[in-house]
Structure formats: structure tokens, C-alpha cells
Amino acid sequence: MHLSSFVEMVESGFDDRVLLGDQKSRITGTEFGFLVRLGATQVHNQYASVIYVGENHSLLPVALFAAAWAGVPFVPVNYRLEDRQLHSLIERYPNSLVLTDPLTSDRLAGFSPKVFDEWLSDLSMIDLEEVGPTEPAENDDDVAVVLFTSGTTSEPKSALLRHRHLMAYLLGSVEFGSAEESEAVLVSVPPYHVAGVANMLSNLFSGRRLVYLSSFTAQEWLTRVADEKITHAMVVPTMLSRIVEHLDGGVLTTSTLRTLSYGGAKVSERVVRQALQAFPNTGFVNAYGLTETASTIAVLGPDDHRDALSSDDPMIQRRLSSVGQVLPMIEIEIRNEHEQVVAAGESGLIYLRGEQVSGEYAGVSLLDSDGWFCTRDQGSIDADGYLYIEGRVDDTIIRGGENIAPAEIESALLAQPGIAEACVVGLPDDEWGQRIVAVVVCSEGHVVDLKTLQDSVRDVLRGSKTPEEIIVRDSLPHTETGKMLRRVVLSELVALQGGTAS
Image (cartoon, rainbow, N blue to C red; front, top):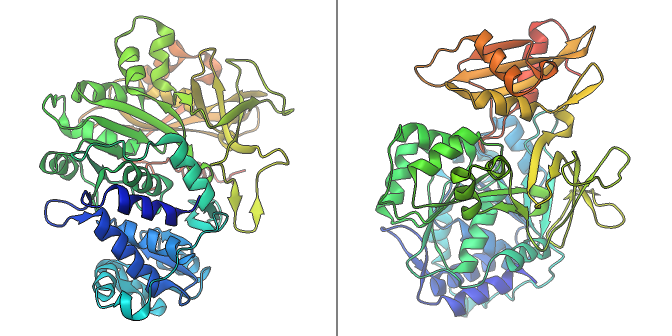
């Protein structure tokens, strides 16, 4: 199924319903479809793709669906990249319509960009009766969206999501028209992240009004939730942490927020517990997915969160650190180093298979002959089907022949009062192969005793997993979606000791 069919469904199913915009500017399903057709008319036979470089915009879905209708890819690019890398990514897709925001426009002068609002204004000058409507593209094997990987250790790769992948995700996880007309979602994740694309598609598909937050602060987020009577929202862990910190123990019993989803990176269980207490009437959802899987493949739902918070059973409490259960349309296997499927509770590499799984970069597919995709994430599934992510296999610390997952140690550190962030890495060591070093960021106003912190980890884990050194910093490097840049931390620490990162 093609995204152009999506447009026709929205037009007929939500003709008079407001789907885009805030209190100042609102677009109905009929108006949305008309704008998409105008945009497609301009793109068709003129451009090979539509590139967007800028902050979130209230009518951003028009650009994606205009590209889809015209049969070309939509390529959102991270505007925060430095100019050299930003230009390099745009150059991969020549003869493109480059859309941007006013603040980024000057940086892209060599690509003849159009400011998004000006492009929308130009569309209003097109007479569809005069030029004739563009017929919708229909090949669901065409590339719909290109997303760039973060590229922390090498040049970013172009991950390809075809129409059939995105529609498989939607049809398998969202019921068309299931939202009430009063529902609204606040989208604060960036447009170049798979969560931004998935939020756009899934909420439009359900008929929920999209309200975009151009740039995030905790106060602005809370204000928009109140002013726009937001019922649903999705944040990355860094945002959730800042919201909790900003509330400082406050409890929002009157919030209109029905559901708050979080994902994109590992989040501290302590922060989740504080968030649950801050929003007692809100259902929390932890969503796990990857760019290569066209977004979510596992979900920890609202009941799971509240049960874990109130239960005395350690096994149920532990579920708060899981990413929940795998969606019905996804197959999953946990395999050992010999690619044999392991028993429940045993750790191994996560493999996925399903119609929404792309596993494809420009020029190469990572699917095996049976359609399985190796995520390179380490994890396990318990006897009740809850999936636990232990971190990237490339991050594994090998100390004295023992494989140690940094995430386990980080969780122990983050459970301690006063620790806001933690990053654990393995530094080269002549005796042990690698030694464990932790870098932590303290919460504002807190000072921690490092010896006490080491002892607390030893009490939870064993001595071989206790950091031999703990370093306190003011901040740690992250991507804009909250993912820890572990390799950056490792490279900096290795450089300080005069070596090179392996």
C-alpha cells in the first residue's frame, strides 16, 4: 500500500476535521489533501526528492505527502549539523527541492533553498484546473523516506524506508480514525528522527490533530500542553528528564494529557517513576524501535507502568526497566554468538523480522536470506515476553574474559540519589584487557561521594562490575534525540590517557 492512498483516506474520512495546527492556524482533512496535490504538482517531473532542513513546522506533513504523491523520497536532514557535513548529505541527493526555515536558509545558499512558508505561499498561486492534477504514485516498493544515521564514528548512512514498510507499521499498529475529534498530539521530536516521522503518520492516520513544537524547553512544552489541551505526546528521555526536573516534585492532577510516550534511548527508571508520580492520571508508554524497523516494534503500556509502580513483586517491578512486549506483527529471536536461539531470560543479539522491517541502507540490505534483521542490540526476553535492552553489542566491555553490559552498571548508578546521567565505558588495560570507568553528571545542587557511589554499585552488582574509576562532569554528549554518544566519551578518555580507542 502506498502513502498516496493514505492522503485519499484522510480526505474522505476527515474532510471537516482539523488535523494540523494550533489555535492560530488550523487545516482540515480536505485542505490538507488540496495542499498535498498542489505541492505534488510542483514537485512532479521537476525534482528527484524533497529535502527538509529546519525545525518542526505545523504543516510539515504537506511536504512529506507531496513528495509521496509525486513519487519521490522525502529526506529530512539534521539542521544542527555543521555546514560541511550538512552540505555533504544534501549533495547525495542532487536535483532536489530543498525546503528550510528562515534561520537555516543562509547556510544553504548554494542549494537554492526555499523557506517553507514561502513555498506554501507559492503553492496558493497554482491553478490546478489550468495545469491539471498530478496522478498519485502507486508503487509501494518506491522509497518514501530517507533518514540519516547519527554517524558518530563514520559518515552517516542513508537508511531507506519504502512505502510498504511505513504502511505495514501503520496498518499493524494504528486503527484508522480511532481518535476522537477533540484529541491533539504535541510533537516535539525532530523531523529527521524516525520517531518524528512515525508520530506524523500514526496520528494523522488515527485522525488526531498534530501540534508541532519547534524547539523544546520544559516550560514551553508544559505551556503548550495546557494551552492546546494536548491529549497525547511523545518525548525522548532527555526531554522527560527535564520536564520532571522542572516540575521539582509538582503533581499535575488536572493535566489533559491522556498518554505520554517516551523512547529513542534508554531512560533512567528513577526518572520514569518520578514522571509517573508527576502525571498520576496519564498513561505512560515506552516505545522501542529503530530507524531500520520503521519505528516501534515493542511497547510497554500504561497498565504495565502502573502495575510496576505499585507492585511488591520484584519481577513485576523490574518490568519498568523493560521496553515491553513485541507487537503482534513482529517476529523476534534472541541469538547467541553461534546464531542459535537462546532460552527465555538468556542474553544475546536481537533479531527481528516483519513487513515493516526495512534493514536497508542506500546500496545495501542487511536482511539475511530469511528476512531477519540483526539489530546489533544486546537483550533478553523473560518468560512473560517482556523485552530488555542491554545496549549495543559494540559497547560491550570485556574485562578479564567476562562480557559486561555498560547499561547494567549505568542503571545501578542512576538509581542513586543525586545522579542525573551516567556513561560507562571500557578503557584499555594491560592486565584485564579493559577496565571499567564511569562518567556521571550530578543533579543540580547535589554533591556525591565517589567511594560511596562505588560501594552502592558493588552492593547491587558484584565487584567485577564495579567501576574502578568514577569521573564527575558537568554534562555528557548526546544526539538531539537523547541518545548517549558513548564513543565520544570513550575517545576523550582514551586521548587523556595517551592511547587510542579500539
